Image 1 (cartoon, rainbow, N blue to C red):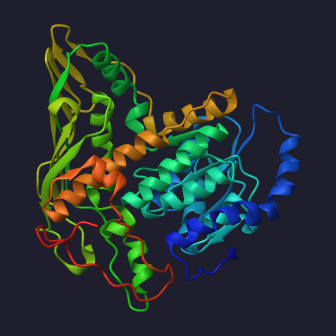
Image 2 (cartoon, one colour):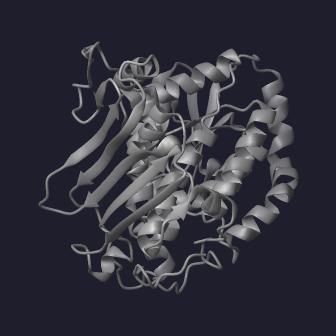
Image 3 (spheres, rainbow, N blue to C red):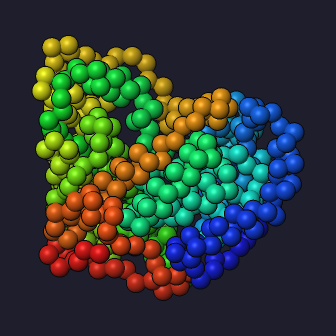
Length: 435
């Protein structure tokens, strides 16, 4: 396994160096790669894939990509940690359907904060970006500049500075005709597609309000072991640090928020909300909240209540509920998506695995030459969640215009290096300042 030590560089440095990276770092592998690609069919019968982020979700996404379509090969993997690459490759190679498509070698495995650069320099057509979302803007920007098609997990940023990087890179993807699909799999899920088709056709009239939820129990946690630096611990325990996950309203609840934006056909104009840290108070849970409630106002005065919680021993509720002038649409019960209106509807059809379908849709777009780019809409949904988090953290009402155009909030550490890294204080509404 080739190992590249992390340099003392922050996200600003990554972005500043990205142009040079595209021209210089890629050059080492680009000339040979381009010669190989010249002999390949233009319709890319064989699509070579690189994976950046070899955790559970990244490994699952690689499997989903391979099994979604014929003639897919995984040829390169990068992650911050060697043990995660080893575990990922073991799982991949043992997979009954995907194992034969794993062509990764020791020369195409990379570790460290700059592993993404070396994956992108390999002979790949498509890259899967599945690191903690705090790294997504840097990696997506580099991937588009490198001319790669992209599948990226949600969310796609943790702060407004990262959102702006994503939007600029999304525009560049359009200019380069690169295909981009995001891990908001409901956009590729048959029951959601059928429901949305009817909502857009006016089945419930004009949407006047609604609710969305992701209320569930606790999740995994990694405790800091002797000899484990603060940086390593935070990266392994990434759910609980806002610079890595964005907090769970961003990391997880973005799915439901995205559905609301989709149905209304717009992002909110403002948000006001609250949250706190009541059940997960031990230091192992970092500094994030364990519950949020946000009221989003959309154009036309439409108000939607957003609620998310990660607490053990509580009732679960995950889904969306939309109220229109002629009826309601209920996405709350899996397998029983319903519209209650003059023209009532209940989805009862077959539903292929949306985690696989999203990759099949991406591969089909790449091979057919049909341009598809989901980056902007997932970025807007990510910003919607960020706006709610900022409101809850500060106790202030937040406008879309301010958070999109004026906020200078950048949660990334000053340096990305293994060593000491202070845990930020738990936000306190009324005391935590807007940035």
